[in-house]
Image (cartoon, rainbow, N blue to C red; front, side):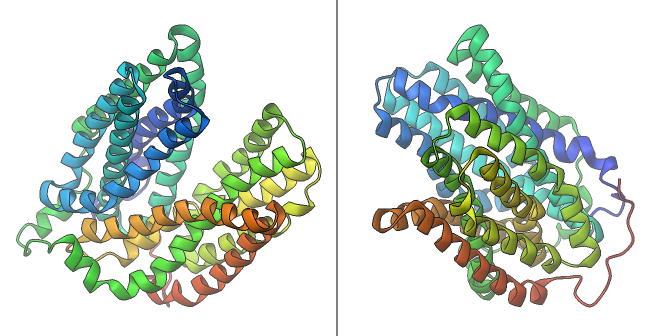
Length: 406
């Protein structure tokens, strides 16, 4: 199931995490300028929002096909292809001369990103031993966040020097570098694939998901809730900042301060999951997110919002790698990528659900009421996870094997 020579994260750092940092940096470069590019091409505010939303739509649409492609061509080949297609999408964004062309390019980027994420998830799930799995996948999530944090700074420098096309060019180069690194780096999952070479071919995606419908209807629903709570956090903080009169610079500072806390927690989260079990992270993460959302209406100043955003960042950071780890735990050995495609689809649906819930409640009540509703649902989600996470934890009843921590 895993490569017996993988004994520490340090030994696989470049091969496992280098491509993710590069791909996430590329996404971070372009995300802040997509709406601005749409406005330059003549779109209104609503049209620009649609263009940005196509990134998420592409991710949703690509989830299930990504599983089928991984089963057919293998995760490593798919990683290289997805990164190259993403680079083409970024180049098309730079060359777009109409909203339709820009939208099509953004949709392509979303599709490629979905395929890349699925392939990376399945690849590490195969390559890393069980006793190191949560740390490996939490670090993967952390590296994704590092790329998204670094990307906007590179994008700002590129825009200053060469305009918007320059930023897209930097993103395309980062994606191509990710593809090149996968191509030349050590194949971490070769041992697992050699062992499975004589196994029957994996069934189609729909068959794998049907066979695992119980875990999707129980643990998967909990993951949908986790992602909805995380997305609600990202939507509610800037909306509340605007409601209490903070400007864009102050709002960015709120995110920056809380983001440092969030980023600092990814490795401890993985260590706790490997050492004590998955529920010791899953339940506290949702509970803290729920409490943070409940107290949003009491944040009436800049520092009050910083405090609330930091509580939310702790809840989010404590859950670093949770979706990745629980998916790897629940996935069958044959048909792993196909299962993970459905698993990731549930998570992506959750990401879309959080902001929609806020919009729905705000339409009939207030923004504060929306925060409270989301907080109560997150606390209910913590209870749901407390019931179901231990039932699928491969370390339940036993301590994880001792592993080096580097």
